[in-house]
Length: 372
Image 1: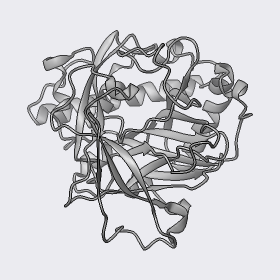
Image 2: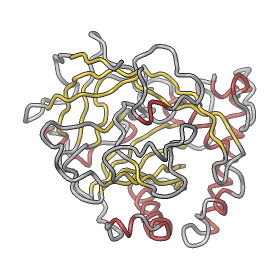
Image 3: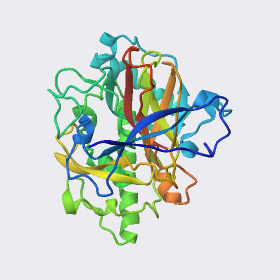
Image 4: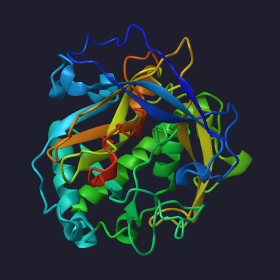
């Protein structure tokens, strides 16, 4: 049964005092110390009994003295990018796969190469959120991402950071040489030069990780292993890596002004490595361009405690030209190991009291690999 607790925050932020009082809103957290069972996806359809709702402060980033464009993913775990809408934001347009893949994807690749200075950028997939609640009649507990019919998803109201470090690495390692062809992101979306560069850098990354793991007396394991044989890289702390820096992001943008269920990022309450969190163990099956099945982990944020308060931040009335880059994993954070680079950015949708009758939020997120 879901319970509610209230966390009163003092000494609000490590950042300067906001110019207006924060909101207080309810955030949902995974409440147990032990991870969920393998492939237990109840948390994705709001059916999990293992969540707790906590009322915590939420600060409008516009009320802080830090200029919005000064947030940096290395320091803060997220970055706010500016880009005029590159495509027609109508429902019909954004639900047209050809429009997304041939027009929107290349525009985001160009944005990240320019503003994040990435050498190689590859978009993994997209999610469209434009319904108020999940459609349980089509929900697949083994794969919550729609594969048939409408691609619409609802806002996700659970604090999370998408992947553990091993979980992120598993997705890179599961990709096959035919990834671009099988995902429909070859001709028309990427160039032959871009594809060759990414696959070459991916091989270089994995080889460098394997060398570092063997120095640490760990066997990396293969991409298709699962369960207890999930691979030594899940036990590896990332030290000793000497390959290219790489990261995985969510590139999150609204198609219109956000007036309901905005996205929040954790400003206070998590260590630079995202902890404390609990892994959600999963087997990914039959993903286009990947090995037939592979083990990975999502990261579920643990609730606040009296000695670890949480403060969240959001962009009030976020505009379509305000693009959030939310980091899920960064090899440089683990290579340094000193907390100077943020590993991930915990985030969640949340509800603002009194805004329930506003239009349903329409937004898009792209999962993206960046290599420097």
